[in-house]
Length: 287
Image 1 (tube, rainbow, N blue to C red):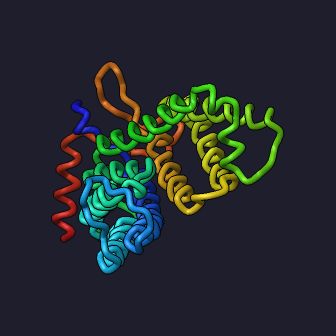
Image 2 (cartoon, helix red, strand yellow):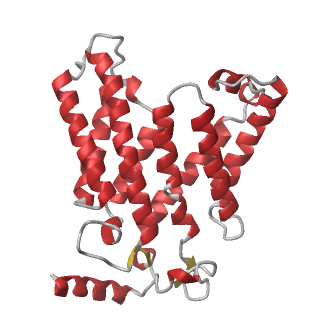
């Protein structure tokens, strides 16, 4: 069986869709506040020299469109068009000014691009079309992107400056002895590596998910600025964890996928390629 023929339960990617929709709304508000300051005459850092700053009416229009797209994605109404619009708007923001760039906005743009093909509105949505299974390959791209994020985040912190804990002492509002900041810095690197790798293995994915939730909660609670953006980032990342927790397993002998052994309630998640046609026929019959 080819990778593009593997199908899996529709519910995990529906959770990811809802999380990405909510994160889109929060990211749009954050981007508006940044670009609004630029349009008001504050220091600008255009990506391309000579590119004029977006004027306030355009920023308001973009904010309204972004919020509408985020809501559409979250509720599962016109999900693919909403995701495409979000990608276009995010790209515009990223090109508008260097101050609008952030790793979480870039990640959101990539994840939304993959979501276009994920059929994430097949369940838990306001649309009438409900399928038991959806293609798995877009989810695999989303999972890989998240894993790469955690891995390179850990690798980038493997330097003497961060390991000392000095940067952490400036980023958080709480005052602690330097020994605790040193310990926290080391644990941060270790935890991010565990999440990046552990999410892929049945024996460790639950622990990795728990560590991930704890990591993002600690970031939101302890950081002394950019809390709004960090909440959006946490929602975006954690909403992808079900893709790992309930992903299909591949049997080496036949190359066919099967439901994970630790989630018997998600039976009948993976079907052969012909089943996809039967689902499409059923949908046309209902319509």
